[in-house]
Image 1 (cartoon, rainbow, N blue to C red):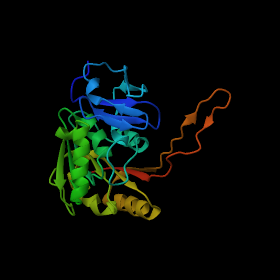
Image 2 (tube, helix red, strand yellow):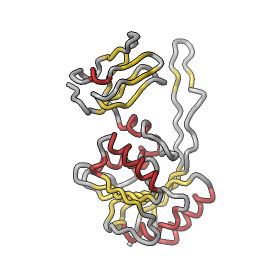
Image 3 (cartoon, rainbow, N blue to C red):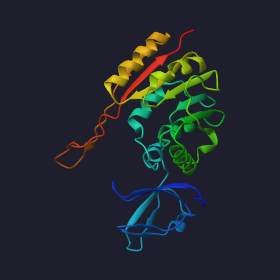
Image 4 (cartoon, helix red, strand yellow):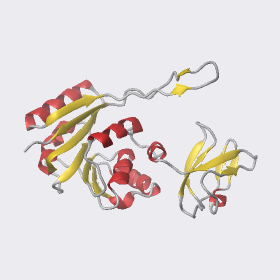
Length: 252
């Protein structure tokens, strides 16, 4: 049974879906008003009707919904990129992760989800407004206990050492390659995302100069399929270029 404060995903269709806490205030939609307090005591999979009789299904939220529903003050990393990062990185329960540039907390949510219960994400952000917003997003997703939020611009060295993975998501990632090398465990991975070719090449060359190996660069594209009787086809719109992912492994 759903308890007060549980995170739930209310789904009517692709355009009308919401991530809410059970027992919260009523939600006004173009399909009517949803009495969120009535979710308490129901089970996942049941429907909650608006005052106009339109059903919204109460679903258990996935990490995908948590990521896509963060309140955005910055461009976020999409699940298509996050999935590759998680499989390329050394992420496991108990891992120590350093993140430079928290943005809106989308990737942070994914990292925190997979390093719990014994791990920690040490996140650094120079913009205080971004940091506060990201913290609220992590709190809403129930993952803030596994993140240390630092309002600080790192320039030469991270306080933490022996990290299992480091993510650099800033405009000039090459500036933190040396700091990342000092903090990473030998044989562990670093990742970055670069929106432009100029950022990409400079980052890769900096990794090579510092002695990183197994350097990989990629772009991840995902296109959904519109399934309809007699006229199934790919969707015309897709989230294409968000940035090039760069990975490298530290040697000692």
